[in-house]
Image 1 (tube, rainbow, N blue to C red):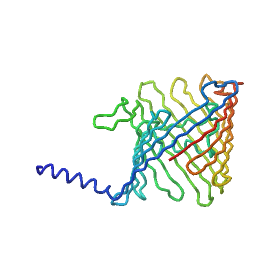
Image 2: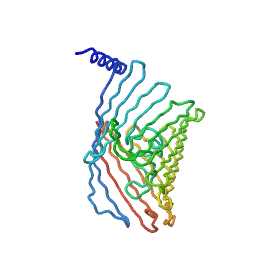
Image 3: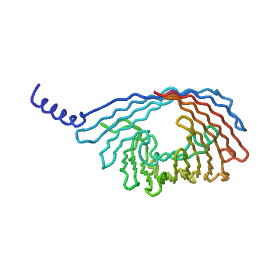
Image 4: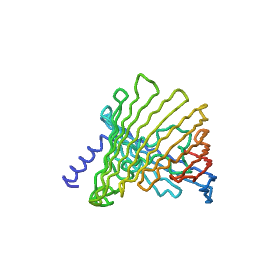
Length: 330
């Protein structure tokens, strides 16, 4: 081996040495069987049985300087066709930098489901209720999460504008769009009120596809309070989607959950969804559901009973759904 190659390999070994303090790889996942029974004016006559899988790989390690890192990859779905990936480096008191593709570990997507529930959110299986907070979506995005300062923490995410969905030469293959996105989430847990958490998030996507394209904007505000086994939460979200006339929706969600014991939990959830599309009559869709979940080690048995009125903003349209779930995790 010539001297140049020796020097090159030595430099590579030196650059990797800081990652060699310790490392672990964990394989996890789950399989979930569901049975659904629907009714109402939108009665679904499809196959009531469902089966979904998740397989994930997590690699964690610690550098010689005390920083830690993790690499995560998961495939999701009945045919395991959907994947999500992330890489993060935690720098002690300096916070955590991340590279995210569909996991949602930074920014506004960390606030997507702030309302407490034992199983599913209001509107599950019956309507379009529920916020559609997306942030940078499944695109490749850089993120940063600060440590907590007196109960206050900040999480940011940025996705640059690109002209195609493919990676540039030498880049990592990932999703791309003709748009750029900046989004953030702020959470505050005041020390004077134990169990209270306040959260606010905002996102703006600039569409570069055409000169006439409109921007997408998202905002959410959430309040949660936990006291023992009782959890109460409220969340309000607004989403404006670019396009002719600016489509969007406003969603208000409320939830109360109670842990009866270490294994059994129950909840009640309610949501109002108002469509802001120019062609909409602004009829509010109302949905509610009752959940119960029971765990036995790595197995969980869950039920959700949901109903909705004025589905998708259409007066008189109703929907009902009952779902049973058996989930085995490893």
